[in-house]
Image (tube, rainbow, N blue to C red; front, side, top):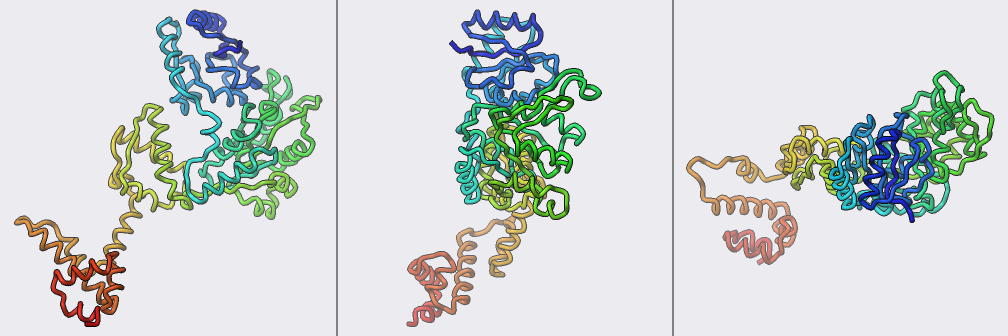
Length: 457
């Protein structure tokens, strides 16, 4: 019978205490060394406990297990980074343990669901651009072909990579990501291929690289355009031969990984400038996917705002509602930072107005300036009489609202007739009215001369 919870804890006493309590509660357990978990399938467990470890660096192979509900030891120095985006499926326990604490944590975890392949494989949004991209993802995912994800920074290229992995036959194996622009180039070879003990100063133990950690799964090479030419040569060799050696080693290792790369750079321009190898570009560009900028899919903004608000609510920041005017303001803004910028704004609003309603006036100035421009343009199209009336404030003595509205309606009808040459049908189209409705209004306001001119009587 498969275990229910995988326990990863280097402190033997704590490991024994937790295991004993879980078993007393009828929960099956299995213990594992922290450095030896990269090949464990998430499907074998219902939850994972992550405690204190000797190696403070989180191994790349933990990604798959993090899809499960997590039980975290609060003392772990890196617990905050692990739990940051897992509020919906994460519980913490504090030593010394009590039976009540453990029972409560397990009960809460059982009542929550971890992300599954179906949700991870669906990108948020139903715009034409997103439907096209989702269709391409579903088309290429079942194959091991290399995919190159292109697009501006902040468009969610890693989410596309996750969707490819979730829909692929490798979905139950590791998804390992590495940002090629965030790691110093002198350390990149060790990060990708690993190193042997004593390979360089500070290499006190052998260490697996990302290729080994991703064995059987997907390796996501983010910002591949920032990789040095020297590393490009070494990466090309691995992609061609599917073999490599650890730094300081002479044993040839084979790798079985699906490569997904991404960049915000124009790689063809980089090749022309001599900053990116042409042969590596063609090796990566088997199936290109363009991640659309947010300004090209503004109709998805309401869905994205709801999704971000939902996630923030799961993290305890409180859910928000946005008025239609606020959403309109967000849809007018050009979004140079794309989806990442939108996510940051939604989080900022959640902090400022917890569990509240966000109006257009509540948004930072730069996000509502577009709506102000639209309102100004619309006001400029009003007839002079109507514009003056709209800009008026309610007099202290009050006014006859019926007469006030009739004055505006008459002015609008008169301008529509003037613009249409007195043809009632055309004037009705300008006012978005039925012809018969406009004729009734003309009679109501006794605009008899216009009626005879418009109808030809």
